Length: 361
Ligand SMILES: NC(=O)c1ccc[n+]([C@@H]2O[C@H](COP(=O)([O-])OP(=O)(O)OC[C@H]3O[C@@H](n4cnc5c(N)ncnc54)[C@H](O)[C@@H]3O)[C@@H](O)[C@H]2O)c1
Ligand SMILES: [Zn+2]
Ligand SMILES: [Zn+2]
Image (cartoon, rainbow, N blue to C red; front, side, top):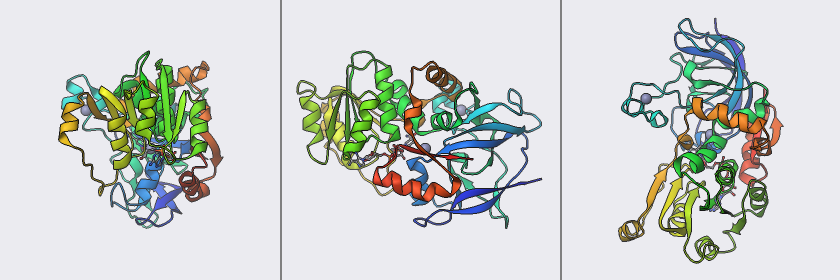
């Protein structure tokens, strides 16, 4: 029997999202049905709605969510009705070459539910990042459910399901920020601020926040930025160098996803330093750099998918740090909104008025 719920749908590239009835099947083998309690609005949802990620419309948006397991498929173990979970988009397979080499955070064969959620007329939906949680219920692979301490508020927990994990992990896992490092973060939305928070947690000595919006820079200080640069007013490469004895930062994290900001990151890092790309570019974007500079400046150029996280390792740990008062994840929640507020939340995100709007269901 399929469950009927309302969901936020993107029907064609560039068109506003709408609410439609979604049919959610009961879980089959390897699947879990989840009652979504909260789901954050991530910039990646907006990329989907603009056609920047794919053309498999209609999309069921929403992928930064926490909720309670409603039912599991017949063969599912280790997860049961009533468990409080954060949904992840990295259900590792255990079989691919990355998993077999002991590096499951790079898993090349992550899985999602086998059955499709559909519109009322049977049109299959593509759930954003295999989740689709702007709906009171969603169907996922059981491995996409990570159990955490249920005393955390769902609107805070859900953020670990994407953007906040991506930023924290870019600093902690991908860049490996450690005590005494200098770090610059370009783009201080939810993802960039989480990279700032992660750098602070790791003991970075200097954390330089770069954005084109002064309001974002004020918020960045609350997450641990020691210095701020408005790159609409001043050249960020020169400014970062002058804040680091003329050298550049040990680590620069790009959290915008544009060739210009990537180029700034590339030149704002010290010789032999590290650049981490977390921002998601669109398919048209191209990067041009003198190959001699890529060679001559040495160091490491990495990209970070989902903060190279392993949900079973990282989510429960980060929830515990939050509950102990050591990780102020609640500061990312700018507002809570109803399902009908997603389109307006995209506009607020574009105007720079929010870090995260979170849909409560
Ligand atoms: N790699 C991953 O796993 C992953 C996960 C989640 C999100 N993302 C991506 O990370 C990026 C940021 O996401 P978000 O949710 O924080 O978005 P956001 O819109 O909240 O934040 C983007 C920030 O970049 C700033 N900005 C825009 N142009 C700039 C420029 N030229 N120079 C400096 N700052 C600039 C904006 O003012 C804003 O503060 C997006 O591309 C998103 O798709 C990646
Ligand atoms: Zn794998
Ligand atoms: Zn996201």
